[in-house]
Length: 273
Image (cartoon, rainbow, N blue to C red):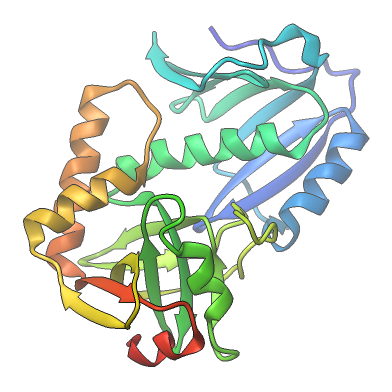
């Protein structure tokens, strides 16, 4: 059962954060948190937009949590439960409402939003991908790999006419029979949100640092396997995991996938596109 919303005499303030075209409202009585959220999410904070989902955010002492606890996500009696060492959250998708308990910091709600968006994307053919991405000449390019593969390096090497969507978590949505990448505020080493824009995805590159620059196509079976390793998904739900797998297969069938071996200098971008 979801926790009850604030009592009527408690004035709440709402910050609406729109990522991937999906607006989520965060309601709180704590103006300190409002300032933190507006600063953290910047251009992703929108006004005049009715949120599709609303979360009440309660500020509590960090002493209530186990700081070493890993993230856990599960559904029980129609409610999603999201827990980690710095927050507790419940969300009822049908009611379109949820509740978060955390201390005053931007990192907890950042993680809650990531998890919620993965759950939403799983049911619509999309996903969050551990990848940097950028838009150039109206097309989006994704650069995926495990830690130290070169995602942030590719972002840093991007030419001036490329708009960075993210250096950490790429937002992929299926639109009809094609795919679009959206900017996200989920930053990695850059520490800054990507541009709040979107573009059709032209290609996905799996990264590998090398002495010379080379691009080769990836076999579809191998591409799906590597893609699944890099999709961000947290829920303990077999049905949704199957949906994510089906989404990965459909993505590889529609979008060119390559292995990009590269030497970290600006010339590598001459091969992109």
